[in-house]
Structure formats: structure tokens, C-alpha cells
Length: 348
Image (cartoon, rainbow, N blue to C red; front, side, top):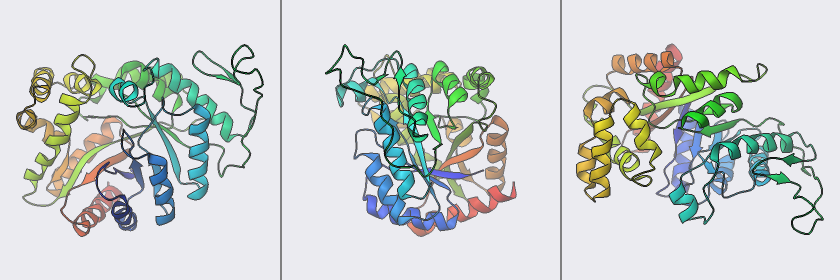
């Protein structure tokens, strides 16, 4: 199992990069660099390339609506060059509130668009002259659009790799099936080992049935907060604020993908209640409404035996790599936790 972690949008990124370098030495394999409607991810990814030596640098995620497919490919190839082959292109659809509200772009056909983007990116990295006649992207632009002067072009530079791994952050049935068919890695949200098959099993199997047999199996990233030791169970509560934000407030009342997944994971009544409280402005009550059982099952916080049991459950459910957050108030504490997790994972 590889160990990955997601950086925060907030705080001093330069300080975060220094910590990533220390965590790299402690056993961290991959870092996800978020974007949302914060600073852009590629700038930070390039900075990390200069500050690290081994860790894979993944966008976590780049929204597909704010860049052309060829720019996504160019960006990944550039970071792959700077990092000597350590880039992973993480793609996702984000949500209509961000895409239409911040970028001013219609939120349409996310699954079809990602499918075409993956195809186009792989053309660019192979240095083919890019031609694509899809439902959502036409490259070059057809003669009856624009000036009519567009012609097929190939990337000027020679990429470090002609296959840069692509991860997709997907939640819905169709998007998860597409991910299992085409992507190299899957970054789900609110993944629960106990409920994963009920929520996503059918979609994953449908996509895997269409997968190119020459492509490596899909890498699945999931995990939770990590704290290993006696008397740490109270630290699971640190996950309440983030869970309430996504379940209750990330999206509109009628269209919140995270709320849907939480509901399908066996918490239908709780999902509705958390959203009602959060949208009413009572964030603390929404946080308190997150079930203790959910926090326990979806964290790696507790005695070493508990952590080992949860790791086995994750692996049995199909998780191949961990996506975690290290609890601790200082870099030294988080590095120590990473070292301990590395030991346990290597011993599984």
C-alpha cells in the first residue's frame, strides 16, 4: 500500500511543503495538491517538485471545466518534467456551485467530458498530432468555427513519460464506472470499507469489465485520519468539521454529491439532518450530528490493533493505497505518526 495525504487549501504553503519533505523521508509516497477556488494547484505542484525528491505529486483535483484538455496535458507534462517523472494528473468535475459560480462556465456532461479529456491527454503525451472529434471537444476547431485556420499540432517538447498516470475523483455511478474503465487511479470521497461494495461495487465491476487488459489494475486511494496509540480516540472528533462541511454544505440542497454518498453508506436520516442543520447556519449542531460510529469506522485513530484491523478491512474492500491525514499539533508529531503507519503498512 502506498501512503498519500491531501494538503490543505489554507495556511502557509511554503511551510506545508517543508513538512511534505519531512514526511517524504518518513515514508509518505504521494501528496495530493487541491485547488477548489483557492490558489491554483499547478503552481504549488511545481514548487513541491523542487522541494522533494521521491514523493509523487498529484493534483487533487484539477476541475475539468477551467482548462482545455490540451492545457491539462501540457500542465501535467511540465510538472512531470520538473519532478523527473513524479506527476499524477488528478481530474474531477468539482460541482456546479464552483464551476458556474466562480468560473462562469456551464456545468454540463461531466462524465463525457472526462472520458474525452483522458483520450486527448494521452494523445498529447505520445506526441501525436492531436485530432479529436467528440461530443464535447473538437480539435482542431472545425472549419466552420473560428477563423478556419486551425491545424493539428503535436507537443513541442518530449515528455519524460508518454503515459502520465491519471486519477479521477468520482462519486456517481456513471462516473465511477468510467473511472474503473479508463483511469489509472480512483480518489473517492467518504469511502467506507463496510459500505463500499453497496455504494460503488456494481459501478466498479461494470467499468472493470470494459478496461483495457493491457492497463494495470485501478489504484484505489482511501483511508482517513491517522493517530496510533493509547487514548487517542477523542481525536476522531477532528473529522467532524470537514465531514459536516461536505455532507451539509458542499453543494446545493438538491444537488450535493457528498450527501448522497453518506446517505447510501447507511446514514440516510443523518445525512438529511446534517444538511438541514448546516444550511440553517447551525454548523456546530451539524458537526455534532455526525455519528460516532461513522467516525470510528472511517478513521485509523486508536490502538495499533484497531488500526491494523481497519487497514485489513480497507484492503479487503478493494483499497490498494491509503489517503490519510496525520493527526498531531506539530510537524514532529505528524512525522512520527507517518513513520509508525509506514511500519504497520509494510508489515501487513
